[in-house]
Length: 590
Image (tube, rainbow, N blue to C red; front, side):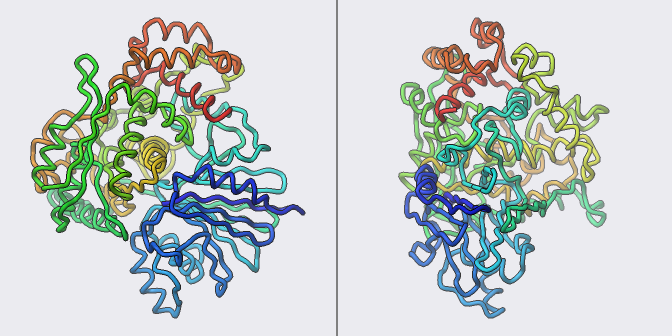
């Protein structure tokens, strides 16, 4: 896990290494262990390194293979790199390091662009050809690793974070109206290629982009997820599906132990993270470090789930760390969490992940986490209504959208009202082949879009703010492909994640399975009381934000009069959503 950056020129200028230095400096937290640059002709790469695999300087980046005429910067981890290395050695390739970065270089040389189909892992990379001047950039199937870019006359630049790219002063910093529509309607999910900054885009997941020496680009998606059982799987019983899921998950958690440093687990006490601990214990892991976090309660809303994480820690004899955060500590951390956001993310648990990562990074450099299980195994409340609906788009939008078109008109000033990009996007996604049933359309868009630009992005940003690598076994692409083929009724059963609960009952205590669904709670922020409310009030009423002319003041005043009365269908604060945008723009000088 690292931070990568680069500048490609297509004119008579050379890359500005001094600015590229500022870009990589802005990502120091992503790779605090080492850094480096490589410049050749009109291409320059920068890198910040977090040492996880091959801790020696032999695996330093940018990595140059003079024999092959290739150079690379890479962020992520290839879990099957040892198997690929053995195959490449059989082809006659010689290695000078023990890391996964060099395996990517050799694999690309051996198999061309199709090498990505052989990679099991999370990755974003850029590879440059010394002789041809071509560059290939790519992102993993589930978008676990980010890749932002900016282009203009004569240049193309990229980085692992959006704020890092703002070191270039010639980027268009204006707000993108399409992204704004997504942000305020599609539950703050802004899908690729859009970002809130008009001059910065992001590479979609499962995508390769080839850049020619003259700057011409070709882009292709290399992976998709078909939903529904294959013909030969139509007759499988529920128990057979359960065994297939269990086997896939066992392999996924085992793969994510590949490291030259210890690997811990973020243990919330819910089914997903508890199952990871149970499967690791089943695989023979002992002395596993686990971490849970709790906050002050607000009213009747409890701020921790320690009672459940304790059960798992005791059952599997983990080296467990409970981290209690009081409100006085959480409030100032909100500013730092916002600074760590590549894009504005309204989930109130961002500050929770930020503070958890701060403490965990003192103990380990790698953790496994349970993100993705709800999306691929149908754990959310809006999935069951999608089973029988005759109006897939309407049913999904009613459950998921924060505001309909009428309320968007109440919120935004006229200059920002420009159609309904988010609803149009969902309609187009639902119309694509490969997911025939409404439930499968919902699961597919949540897997390919919402998951990537909400929980996955949130975890990457908050963990990497402390140089902590988070690995997500539920997003092993083979697990995702299998989950998409499992009949929807087996997933939505038992109030959601039915088949995963059945797998869990063979591995972990029933008490953490047969209970009400929990969330990562930060009650004081969820309900905007006390100093949190005052902080948001200052942000939305500030002259700088008001001067942008984005929102209507009467709408904001209505929310301020009674914040807890204005909650989205997914139980988010509409006022906090506006305040978070204001604070994010201010923090990043936009």
